[in-house]
Image 1: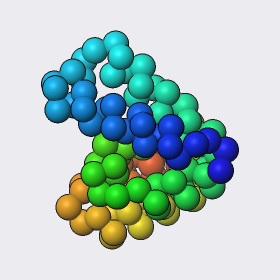
Image 2 (image 1 turned 180 degrees about the vertical axis):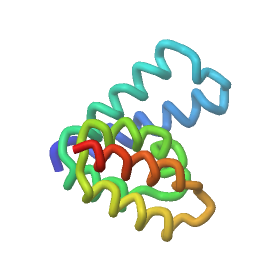
Image 3 (image 1 turned 90 degrees about the horizontal axis):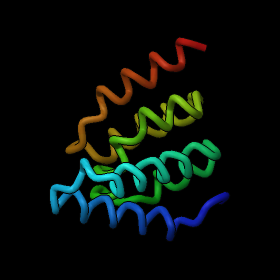
Amino acid sequence: MIYSKNKVEEYLKELYFMRCMDLEETYEYVKIKNSLIDILSQNVDSTVVLLNSLNEEEIKIISGLLIDVSKRLNDKKLLNCIKLLEEKFPNINFSSIIFYCKLILMEE
């Protein structure tokens, strides 16, 4: 794995805390979110492994970043992973994420 899962989990905890405190519009929140997007956009295989290892709460947090990650990676492996996450976590709505990921792949 190119990046540390611990670092990703640390960022996810910070984002969760900031959401709970209604701090989503702060500079720090955006900075952490962008750092996570950068990390997840490094390597599709590592990202798929990471996504498959996360729990439902972590996936809820990270799901909002997947369209941006998909734009950067532009890889069908990520789309397939998201489809599997949709089956694994039926309480999370992935339909718009899947839709936009498909559009991104069609733009190739």
